[in-house]
Image (tube, rainbow, N blue to C red):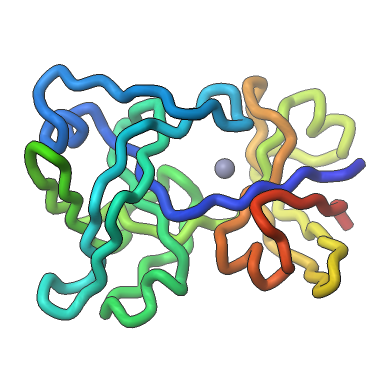
Length: 191
Ligand SMILES: [Zn+2]
């Protein structure tokens, strides 16, 4: 079975509280584009972020917000983004933010300074329950996915995340995709 691949550029998931600090009380995200996972959408809103120290770090403007809102704000960047900022965030699965890196967010109304919330995303495979059964894999498994291209790569330790609402798709960050010659979308096979 072919595994579709999508590339995640740097982006932000916001909590209700931080959304209101950045955009104002009672503010609601506006949907810009539906994403492949049925629950997720790219919002119209973007936020500027500061990574590393305020004097010597790096600033990224207009980082896309991805909805819906989450329990805790999470900022995902690539290792290439982080290099030169003075901070190398840990590689983590989404939602696992304990002792992750600090980051500052700037919105049109206010700013939010987070002691943790900045990560490099762990490569992972979204999978619906019936798809997981068909592939013979389970939630929490680590699989290897081979990508055939001009510069073929085998991605190891791809963590499987099974949920009824998910749709089969491997998520890579821009560094991983660039290394395999994937531009935005691609496909692979589980070894
Ligand atoms: Zn994902």
